Length: 274
Ligand SMILES: C[S@@+](CC[C@H](N)C(=O)[O-])C[C@H]1O[C@@H](n2cnc3c(N)ncnc32)[C@H](O)[C@@H]1O
Image (cartoon, rainbow, N blue to C red; front, side, top):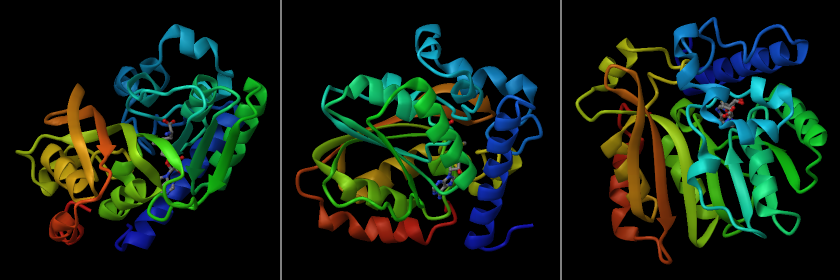
């Protein structure tokens, strides 16, 4: 059993590598049926993955990209993406949201996908080739340390990944760093009701199943505020377990990050939530 943050991250990486291999081998859709990723059993299938994309979007994608969809929402449906913009998808998996974003921003824009799992990156590149999009770049790295310069991105999206991070304050502060002033986020994630303690969240599902590591609504709001965001909205969309929800997270990077909020960020870093 993973005990340290590094061990937990390695366990996450290993499980998603297995998932990408399974999609490549055509053995099982998303390979989540064993609870190894964001679906704990077949009855959850309508709340995760490809079912969250409409028929028109699915029609724009190679089959392997939809089969590899392991998200808990559809960030491309909530993020405002305009022609010519630069988009970054944190934890891009098989590339579904990067491909859809690349089509939305057009040839004058760029869509980056960032993932730590080689097998997922290979699958995503293959899917992007098959989809015929050339304005995409898949980067290897961790979302706690994004390999892009400061103020280089218009929109950050992510689909069911931040709950898997062992250092959420670092992720939120990296999002703020890479976004241009006025840049925005459109994130899908699992979020807990404030009444649930970290122990109660863990009773409802595993860390690898995207449940135990979820922030509560007010932890998310406080973390985003501390990282320098404003117009913060965390809205539940569908319940995935008692008190746990798929949620849409939106916010805008303030022109000047509020340094007065830093103590809140430090406090969040030390809390049991991450
Ligand atoms: C639940 S899947 C979601 C994939 C994709 N967003 C989707 O909707 O299908 C999680 C993905 O995030 C990646 N991931 C998890 N933790 C990460 C981290 N700390 N840094 C970079 N990638 C990470 C995994 O390798 C995996 O591809």
